[in-house]
Image (cartoon, rainbow, N blue to C red):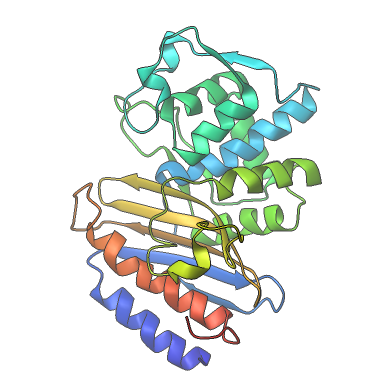
Length: 280
């Protein structure tokens, strides 16, 4: 598939979606890229939890703190929405690494507030600008649906930049980057990135590891559906960030328009970057 043909397919997808899309994808070896409105600042929803995770690992390094240090659930941490910790008892303690893991793989909002209480919003935003080098990314608040406004703001380009550093194992440290990659590969809410990818290549069923491995983080709010991550394949690896907002379909449903149409965009990107792959 040449780039012209890829763009015809991309424009068809974008033209059918009743909302606004921005995306950036880059091959990690050739540095070939595909993008559309990748510098437009958009609402992150839970995708902002990736820079929160990175800032938490940096905090542990800066304070010589162990990943196994217990972190207690306080009543003020508990919030509605995704996750399981809000259903458990206040006072429960978990290792910091487990709290970070829950924040990512089930997008646990209570776990997010626990990490933000430990690290601090200002520290996260300092990390984003000073360590992440992300000019357009900002954490706006703790997870609290009584406070108006977005949880975070970013661009597809910024998110891809952060993911590239993680891929290169230069985000915080090689050890921290490897730990973050492992957490992202355990994602339970696979949405836009994976829905249309070849099932036999991404499934972990059976004894053999999947040919294609994905580490990702999605985010959902009313009218917002995002998915960003790293895709590793035998035919080359790439990072991809797909952000969407102002969608007409406001349903929290598996067949939300964004979750049906935008996976086609992910598949086009996959096909473009893995042109030497056999047909599934």
